[in-house]
Image (cartoon, rainbow, N blue to C red; front, side, top):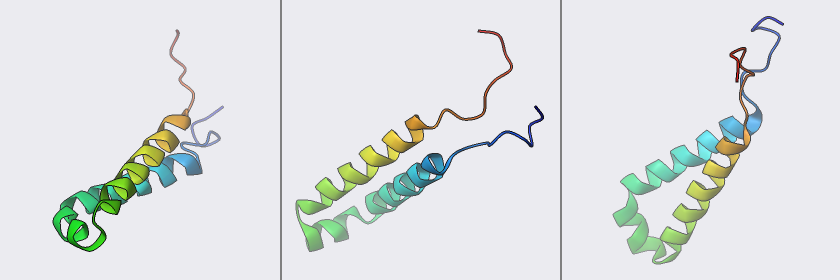
Length: 68
């Protein structure tokens, strides 16, 4: 199979990266969010980062033609 025939990454990978990006943006504005949401800010950040990492790790990526 050529590289064009194989899927590079699944939707889980891209969704996970999107959630991790949102978690990063949350860290940048953590002070303002903390003033607004209080303790829920950390719960939301943990949820975004945890689910994002889970989805990224679920993606196996393209198969390698290297020997084991």
